[in-house]
Image 1: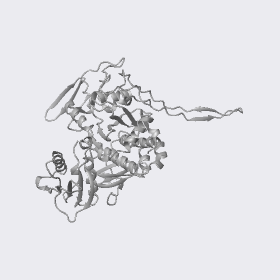
Image 2: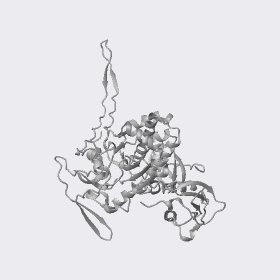
Image 3: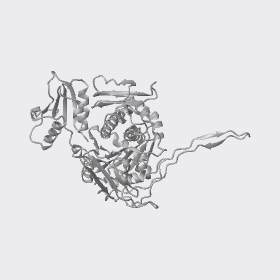
Image 4: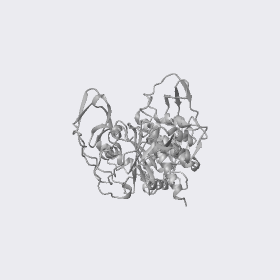
Length: 522
């Protein structure tokens, strides 16, 4: 049986994967100017061979605590480092503690199901309606008034919702924007993890403060305001939060030996690089499997020159999955000292020791098939121009509520305790490692990839072979999901019912297969 000490370390590693690694990498956005494409030292990443000071928080009036998981522990206060001041007299030197940052004590969060109090801080004027505009063939104007709180999302009491925040500052002792905002909803009994990325330009109502980009909520009111904003606009109860700076990301990834990332779409960008004689480096990544060290993983996750903010969310979660896989695959205990040294300097969280142990126990049972990734994208938000010319995303709350409910639910088959649909990939595409890229995408979609093998001969079009028998509606839905993913027509689907089988579907990649085409728009 695994000891509680080992579970604590496993919990810590899960926090590293969910917090330091997801949030830390994206936190670099805003630190440097918008990357630009210039002619400088170029680094072409070689594909892997083949396979395989927190602001004072507004005081919210807490209701009686509903369950133990709803009470957050105070954040850890860093221990002061003493220095010796020499004295001309014989007595020993007098230790003088250096100045240290003491985080503001956290309030007790509200239990699940309790509406967010809509009160204003003393001296805070009542916000007036805000007018936003957008131009198409005509100029549209929209007047925003304080929205009513979104109904609370119904979740089992044992579900753990962790708010992951990535600061645009190197250290959590500095207050800044939180350009990464991810909700990780953990269902312990399955177990499963559902990730929901929230865009930094989401124009949110902040209780007691008024409208503003959601990435400014933390700097305006600390974790309490951030959690209240999430509750009001998304109906999500937050059990714990964790906020990181970006300083430790590279060291952690390198301590893990790097990570494997399935690059689906070409990425070309230029990044500041102190190690380059020119001070910056070009990075060019083509579709395929790439082994990335800490620096290149950071660059891959934060790039925005040739892509959108929504696409960046996809790459963030790709790197997260790669990191989690690496953590689970390695004998990680010997690496703990280097990881812990980086983590304790860069993470502010109200997770306590029991919480870490609980996460550790969950993490050891988690199958990556039961990790679901979703994004608040163009189906639920629309771009407008806010006050002072700000680019903002205005939500359609009806659509947003539906998106949140689906996003934070466990994968359907995991919820029903059914095995995932099994897929074999037959790779007849242009590149050998594209089979691995296709496999990673299928795992994102909830399929189990049993094996990957090369095709005996190439064929022009990608085909899907359905080996299921009977008229199972779930199998029909799975087939529809595959045809939609690969944009197949009816002639590209072959029915071959087989009773004795170890896979349910074959995906035969043809010469027309291109990994980026299977990436869903947000």
